[in-house]
Image (tube, rainbow, N blue to C red; front, side, top):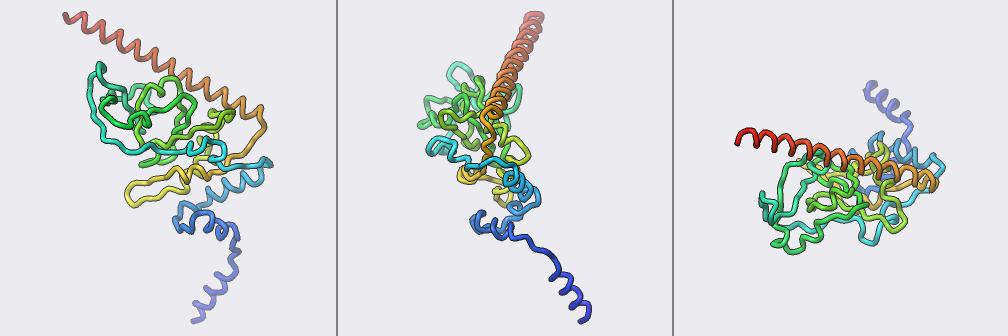
Length: 241
């Protein structure tokens, strides 16, 4: 009995923060542990104390500009003559993804699966929150509906949004909303609610330009590597004739 009373006294002395209680309402009354981790608390604290105003990501995007295209029945082929190159979420970051093609002309609504240069993509399932910048190369692919599309408004710098969502702060706020029993998921409305700090314009511009340059160089690296591989394959094939 005495031990129980001592434990009760210890428990009563714990200083409880009002912040998690406030988060219960922000989190759609969810009780998922990922929403209330120390990392999430630190991320919010940084944004509150950084001195810059924040807006929701959805406010920086076109109306309905954070979305998934509808799921479609895919018709695959392994020939380039009639197929359009297709990428699953896990392949969007590979230098040389596995070649797979879709009969695009046979799939109704396939136009919603294309992406445009300057968009930002986020993995939705499996490992949610992996960020991809749509460069000149990716716009030629059909991308799985399991990548959330983020379409910035005119004048909003996509490279800055990509960089922010790739930071530890941004990624923590993306993944805090993940749910699922065997496979983790996030949804577009979760992403739209993420606060984005409005740092000075010159800083945003500088970050954006670096991201665009980095992905352009990545595309060039892909092209050079593919040319080298094709050259070697041609040489080896010619030698065996």
